[in-house]
Image (cartoon, rainbow, N blue to C red; front, top):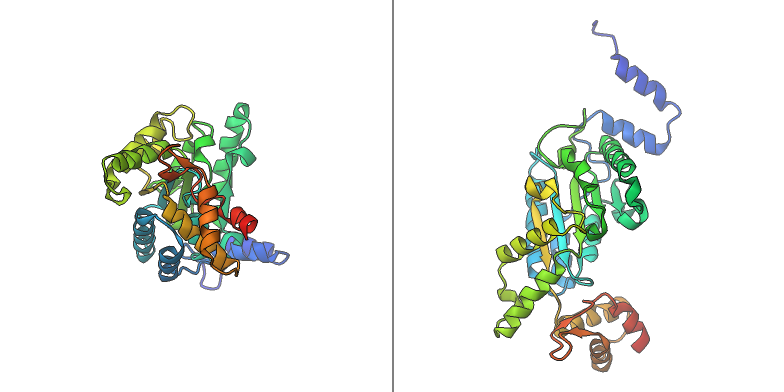
Length: 316
């Protein structure tokens, strides 16, 4: 090929670009380089500060997420995508943390075209269509990774996912190349699940009965218990999953149940966010109105801080 010639693929792409939309042009720019960052604007220090100030009662989460994300981003040529799985009872902060993380990774946060969210209830409702869902999911991920290798994929309510469906994305989670011309190994996958929450709550409660604090719980014991629970549950999306068998999850992040003083912290945060005066009577009223378990001892919040915002509005 002579020095003045242009590769055929480039000519085809340039020809198509003449009538391209802004979205298409962004994808076009990304197609030329595996290093394309799209609107990726990571601020790990900001994430760390926000978690320290606003995430209540989750020391493991702060440590694991910040350390994992920082180390992943410092590696300019990772061997595989970052895969995290958030587990815990409702209202303990799983969705809150995933949304915060995205906000500190992309300029447009959850509105970024490179952040993709999946819900089994919305996107995969019918068990009899699982084979079609597998094809759709694989195609969707591959297409979006081709647009931008710095994509984030959020899979909500994994405990409600049809077993076997999620394994279709295994090729995207490991160290092999499956997307030609795209460094898909810079992507981040986050699974969110209530699965394992009962085991986490039971371990925390056992410590309380032993007159020990929940912060004394062993991270390794939590990870082992959660992994076993979701892998052996035939109603869980991770049931007998190769993602767990092949150890493709880099960080399994447990969210601990919250005690009443944690709930009160959530109330203070919510009052401040709403621009309301922080009053002790409102804090106590909201905290007292929330159900706790066990029924008699009332040690941990049954709903975490999930209903705090609506209760603050009611009592204010």
